[in-house]
Image 1 (spheres, rainbow, N blue to C red):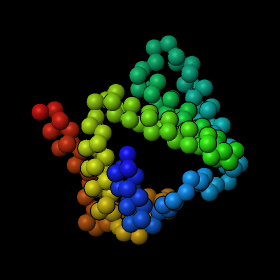
Image 2: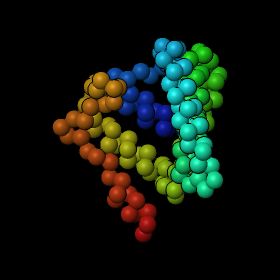
Image 3: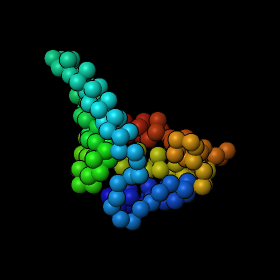
Image 4: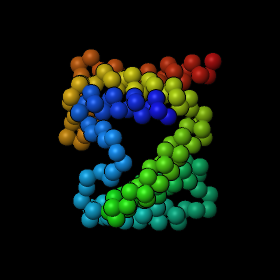
Length: 150
């Protein structure tokens, strides 16, 4: 896990995104976080009506949305412990998605990281994402997955 944190920290530093050394909540408007949390919970309730015969995809998606709602709710209530719990659950679900799909999670992460590091240093778009530089290289996930099949 430390290697993953170091890789993402390196990317964040490259594009000028925050890298904090102490546990803290993300700066936000608590009312906005509360509204987003409510809307995510409403979405879950809407899809709960399809409970009989829910696909594996829908079950996993709803679990992920619930944990995201809990992350937003923790920021709305300014509860760092709840935010840490929601983050841990989100991470566990993401790894579970890879396990459920048979994806080589470590290799996929490394390839996405390699690609991300070709984005513009010190540059982010208006939505906080790194800007694709002229020499940006897409992740070669197709090649990676084909190699896994052999």
